Amino acid sequence: MTTLVDRAFIALVADSSKKGGLSDAEHQAEPANFFRHVGALTASKIADGLVDPKLVLSWLLTHLGAGAGVTGMLVPIRESGALLPQLFTAGYVAQMRHRKWAWVAGATGQAIAAAGMVLAALTLSGAAAGWTILALLALLAVSRSVCSVSFKDILGKTIGSSRRGTVAGAAATVASSVVIIFALLLIWDGFDRFALVVSALGIAVIGWIVASISMASLNEMDSDTGDRPMIPNPWAVLKNSPQLGWFVTARSLMVGTALAPPYLVLLSANGTQEVAEIGGLVLASAVASFLSSYVWGRFSDRSSRQVLIVAGIAAAIALGLALGLEWLGIADTVWAMPVVLFGLMIAYHGVRQGRSTHLVDMADEKDRADFTAVSNTVVGLFLLGAGAVCSAIATISVPLVIWVFIVMSIAGSIAAYRLHEVQSD
Image 1: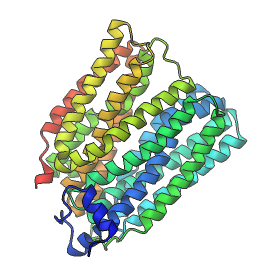
Image 2: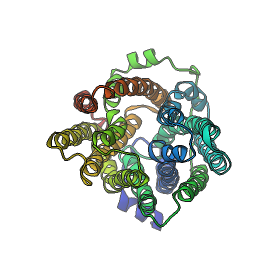
Image 3: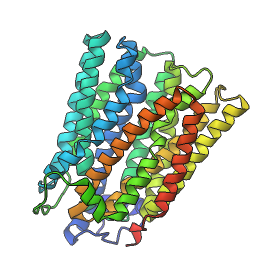
Image 4: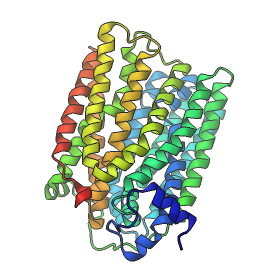
């Protein structure tokens, strides 16, 4: 007799009968674990959207008078802190029989960091507020890195290979609806925006606590810890897996989907960081996620390789549209950049869904933590370098930066073409 959970699981996924690399016990526990994953990811993605360093925290630090120098460090700290430590934490996570506790610890750390931001915003101002929030963001990013390096392994142990993309897609769709409401409130003049942003940080604290509780309830079987180095050798891992090398190359070349939004604002003649415009950016990203994430997730379960190819091409088209609008002299119109950003964010969510699903499906259980750590570390280093180079190029020409991202996106699609169809393995 099927339960309500079983029926909902069957309705949401493409094929619930295939084990997808799971044992009999893991397959039996999969329907309930599916919704625990969705619950944890939904809550954490809501929190992520409410503590967006590019938009929300940058406005908060500006409002508190932290200074442009501190504000400009938000995104590099967030991105590098979330990716680079994974090389050092992967070995410790791999020694745990139940990796869900690493994810729970990471989510708890993010909740503590967000709570500290609320306190700092209410009690500090100026440089003191800026440096304090920056330090808390570093804690949040490192905590997030623990979640990232452990999640791929947890997902691979508890969800079948033809259903993993659907988990992330469903969670992102639900979470984006909440972020859409937040963006609309930011745009509306009826609220005190400082109070709204601080309240959003408080809701993020609750989100990560809920996420940790949901993940803690996951039915995870014991993992084989085995004998392995605590810190994997990146070059050895890449040398032994040429497919991982192509994956890292494709993913690195597609970082433009994450780096481009600030340059789209600069491309607009009146590209100022007013709060209403920030709300519009948050809204564009959230609506794109809401409309595309579940579709990308289902598509990834069929072919994550094709998702990466299509997403790279879509990013190039969206960025090409931005240059076309700038050439026509209408990039500063009310609708121009929001439309471009909407298209770019659809591509961005495709890249996220595709690379996450592909990495989990291409790696065996014994290699998953190392593959995740090595790929994220290499991509993190590339992202920092690309960000610095593009910032320098932007002092000469913003359209030239957009051209660089277009070429990178196309090259990323070509690299993704070299990947194997891991869902058919």
